Length: 146
Ligand code: DQA
Image (cartoon, rainbow, N blue to C red; front, side, top):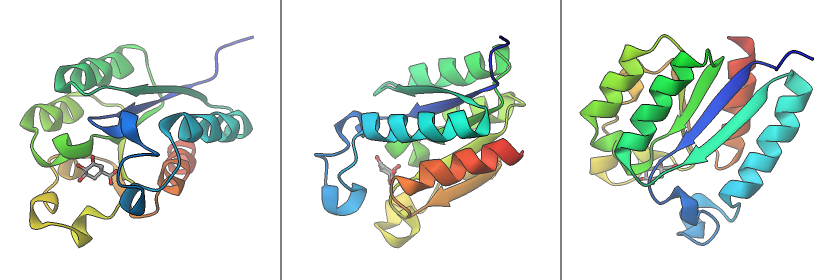
C-alpha cells in the first residue's frame, strides 16, 4: 500500500518537559499524549504523522529542510522560545515550499512582551495559539485541507 502523505510535527526547546513544565500555562498533556492524539486523527484524515522534538535550533532547521526533501504535506511547528529569537528558523521556513503552520499551546500575545514577536509568523501559512494541546489537532485539520 502507498505511504500516506506525511505531516511533520516539529517541537522546539523545553517541550520535552510538557506535562510537568508550568502546567498552569502549558497543560498536563505530555508530548507523547499529543503525538498519540495526532496519530489517531491522522489515521482518520489519511495522513501520517512524524513527531519530533529537539532542544537544538539546528535540528529544527535540518528537519524543515528534510520535510521539503521528503515531500511532506505540511509542517506543524511549535518552535518554543526560538519563535521569538531565531532569524535562522525564519529563513528555513521561508526557504521551503512546504506550508508551515505555527502552533503554540499558550497565547504568547497575552504573555510577556518578549513573546509578542514571532520570527516564524511572517513566513508561516498561519498561526494557532492559546488552545493548549487542542491547537495541534486544529493545525492537523488545517493541514489536511491545504
Ligand atoms: C510556546 C510559547 C513560547 O513563548 C515558549 O517559549 C514555549 C512554548 C507555547 O507552546 O506556548 O516554549 O511555544
